[in-house]
Image (tube, rainbow, N blue to C red; front, side):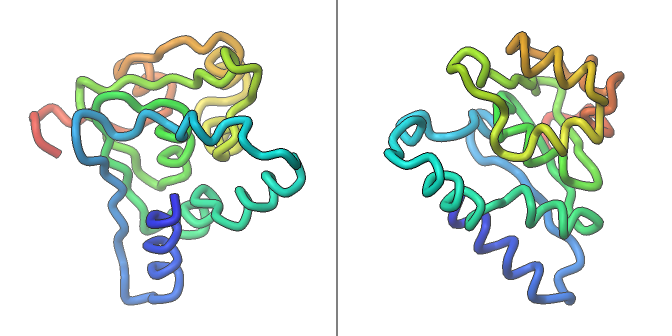
Length: 155
């Protein structure tokens, strides 16, 4: 998270950076937050303040006109919440999307209640957030969660 926020902060400070591409390395875009961090804070207020101080979603939202997200494989939790802030979201055919927080007694916490809501509306967001269901790339495209499907193997 720190590295992403640092890179996005650089783009915020430099108008000559005209395009920001979010892409994941490895077998998936992002499997979401670090589960070891969940529930580790002893003070909920401090945990919230810490999270807001390094808020990648807010930065992507500010930069949205310059941001394109390129997704593949698992896009879980923050792995879809953050890209949903981007102006353009393109996914490979192997991508899938899930908000699993309900299984931990939580709600999406990386901005998804705003970013995903803007893209697919409250009913579909409620379905994803309250069921934890996995959404395939075709459904994501039909709903407007993503803007295009990359038909080639490489992004």
